[in-house]
Image (cartoon, rainbow, N blue to C red; front, top):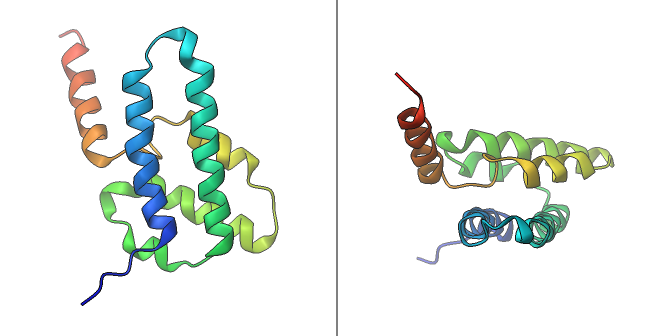
Length: 119
C-alpha cells in the first residue's frame, strides 16, 4: 500500500535535518545572521503549511522522544485555530536548541555535555 506522508510532518523532519546541518556547517560567527535567516524561512514555511493543514492528527504521529516539537506544534495549532499571532512561537523554534532537532542529535548533545562537566 501507499504510505501517506503529510506535508507538515515532512517539513518538520526536513527542518530537523537542516537545522543541525546549518549549525554544523556554519559555526563561524560571521555566518550567524544567514543561519538565523535560513531558520526563520524554514519555520515560516512550516507555519504556512500548518495553516493550510491545521489538523491535530500530527500530534498523534510524533513519537514520545520528540516532546519538544509536539508541544510547540500543539501551541502553533492552538493559536492558528484561535486566530492569534504565532510570532513568539516562531522565535522560540528558531532560537531553541531542542524543538526542531532530531532525537539522536539531542542524545549526542546530552552525552557531550556530560563528558564536559568536571568531576
